[in-house]
Image 1 (spheres, helix red, strand yellow):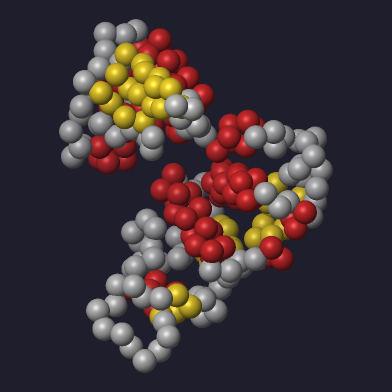
Image 2 (cartoon, one colour):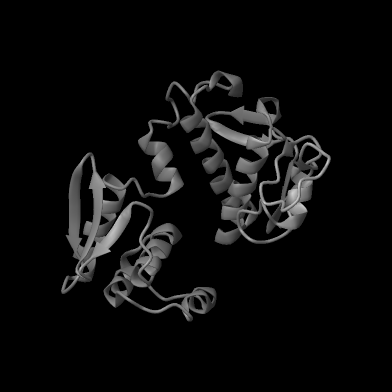
Length: 236
């Protein structure tokens, strides 16, 4: 994969000021879309959470009480790429979902993978990683865009918090979530088939209190108050 930008990437970054152009030289060494997006963001002065620039010379992060830094100027592009990836992956915990799942020990043949009953997986972090992996698998199988995948994961998290999707809805087999009842996937998109009527939350932004005890999630959804990405439809 080369460092050439797609038309969509060019349009998305055209209005953003280029701050650290040396990161663009690393794009030819990026092996996947995840790291390409990270280095595009770095070039425009937007580091990942927990990472920051200093003196326009260093990329830094704190790990276990210690500061780790990478000099980002006057560097060979490959060396800079490898040092930044090492910093982000090993110190800041920034890596693709598939790498994070592998790093957690959730590979084929592991104790977790051998469980085919979703209810037996109790650790929240493992469940979260498995849903992330489900989104990654769905993106590849159904041709979802990066933006769609991010929105898909955000909506899954929302439905889980509101208990519209529960343990009994998840089909889990061979270390993978294979399907979720209430979610339909198709080429280039997805759809959440269940309404929000069952969940009630407080409308903290309401200027006047109403006689009812709260607003349904559906009400807030229509207002856009709960949308994590910005579109006003749960079908993409």
